[in-house]
Image (tube, rainbow, N blue to C red):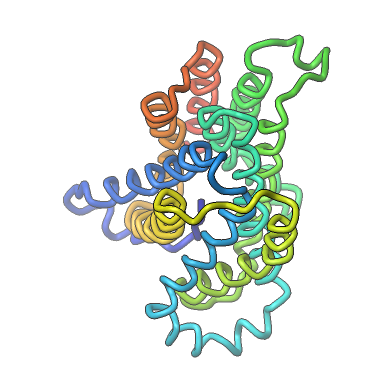
Length: 305
């Protein structure tokens, strides 16, 4: 997942209804859901750091022809804010996606997608602590419901999980991934005001560079992966669709209908991921998934009102 907050055109809201921004906003979570399901599906084909490294390397190369002129012009501004750019790249690009790919080795795609939808609630908490951004009582209740829903999924509907400390490692890794991306999203307001394509190119490239030492270490201690059609297709998918296509669709949609209304579309990630995982991976949807999903959705509606 990768998105920026862009200004939206309020002047458009009073005009004729258009379905286009809603279609764009539905495409983005569809791509992000595909990312987590695909990552779960290729756990035996490609190691997690390897998948993350080549995702951002290939995405950078695909972006380069379109972003080069903007990046060249924005280089002086980037150089003045290099510390913040490195921080955003390491937590939002290197850290988040690598933990996500590690998580799906020991948890289901459905669990990972549901836990991921708590991200807006975690962003609100971090923004409150870091920037003293106040929330209403209704928003606070919404955050609590999201956390309760995610907790139900992590506990898999069993209170004994806490008592026995028998958490699934993948669920805990997914929570850590959500925390990293929440830090990334909250600190986006401190990013330099450069062109969106420049920002993507710089963060993608820095994210891949940050993963290089871990990638080389993984090559030393993990079985070598076979470069076959499935691996190549997987890398091309995660580089193009969850990285570039989803970003473009998301930001165009946010620009047209606003961030608050657009934020509700994040909740489509577990819906799409559940359908894909059930059909493609043979996973099953259980009662605690449905209850957790309802709690998270209800919480999201509350703090977006």
